[in-house]
Image (cartoon, rainbow, N blue to C red; front, side, top):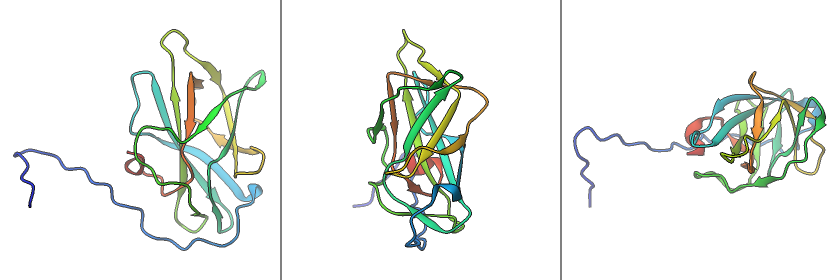
Length: 165
């Protein structure tokens, strides 16, 4: 049965990222680079979300959740990062292509406490699962405030805000 919407209604639909060839070779940290390229769909009210886009000089694949290390001017910060548990709908972990002309990304989520602004982190490094976090992420000029909850999505194909909604 067709659905009739009132005049002036806005319909938002998620269009999946087009299928891409997934190289069989796992990514090597020395070939990867990353930077924050956008904000997530659920920001405000004590939360922040950042889309981190990953590039590679060689075609390769990533799968799973990134390993993350946050640091301040004093050195590495002890931070518990939850895999998943972020508002929205995102794909379960699966292989994604990097360095093939198709972007890959992950979403960082921070939820703060109104009584505690969080711990300022001035730098972030990431790594593929099972490795150390040795790849620097180019951050926006402001520091991240690590709140009471810090979470991350699995690697995703694409880097559009709509895929994390």
